[in-house]
Structures are given as structure tokens and as C-alpha cells.
Image (cartoon, rainbow, N blue to C red):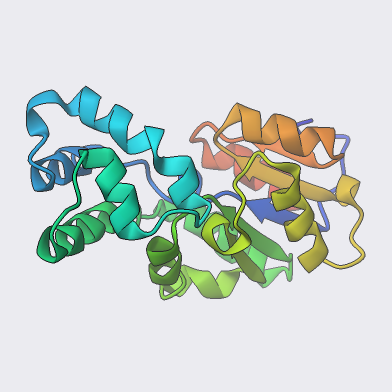
Length: 207
């Protein structure tokens, strides 16, 4: 349920990372496919990448087991290291426009919780970035051992917020299915489509 002019500002926000704060990869896909020596058919590579991803994001597969499923063979230590670096580098670019909104929200004291489907190594890297200090908590699927849109992920995020009622919490995600799951739990939702003005309108009080 998107916020409207009649809604008051939320008491807390739960934010997705990739597609909201993080920029979706473009040319980085080809770099990763080249590392995997699979650039001849990028679509097939992406299908294999995503097919095994849910278990990897949920911490159920090691780096080596994940890439073995993607490639169809166990990579060498060197190749595994290169794949992990290339994979991680795809997801670390952030949207400066969104960051400006989050900085303003942080200055108002608005609690913000990051809730991201991300494997363990990427989670560790994201935690080292400067924007991480804007978040009251950062929750990653690999550490929770469950991925959105499983209701347990949202319950974990709400638990970190203490006594804040779900109807006073705004959930922001670029995936409609994740927003639908949050809506069923009573959270306010913003299906983010790349417009920082929408984020600002729903997160921050109007002047």
C-alpha cells in the first residue's frame, strides 16, 4: 500500500539494497561471463547464474558449490577467487540520488533497516561501505538463512525495530513480489521503480 498525501511519515523504514540503494548491473554481466568463459551466450549464463542463486543467497551453498552448479564443474581456487570478485563487483555501485535521500532521512533520526538477499561474501563487503552507517541494522539473507519474500525475513527486520507497529513501517523494494509479501504482513510498501522523488515523498515529512 503506497503512501499518499493523507498518510503521516513512517516511524521506520525497511529498505532493499539492489535496485534501490544499489544500481542494477549492466556491462558488469559481460565481465562476469568472460571470467566464467561463457560470454558466447550471455542469456544462458544469466539463467544458470539465477537458477542456483536462491540457495546461495540463503547461505545454503558455499561459494565453490554455487559456482559448480552454475558452471557444471568445480572451479579451481584461482577461478573461484576471480568469479567471486567479479560477482561482488557487480553489486557495489550505489545510486547517489538515493543516498542523498537516505542522508536526509538519517539526519531526521528515522530508523532504517537494510533487508537484502545477498550471499555471505557480498554481505561482508557491503558492510564496509560508508553508507552502512546510515542503517540502524543491516540484515542479509545469507546470515538469516532465508530470502525474501519469505515472511520470516520481514519478521526479523521488524524485530530489530522493537515496538514499532508494522503499519508505521515503510518497506521499499524494486520487486513487486517482495512488496506484496510485506503488504500481507501489514507494512506500508513502496514498489520502487527508480524514481528518488517517490522515495523522498514517502520517507520524509513534507515541508
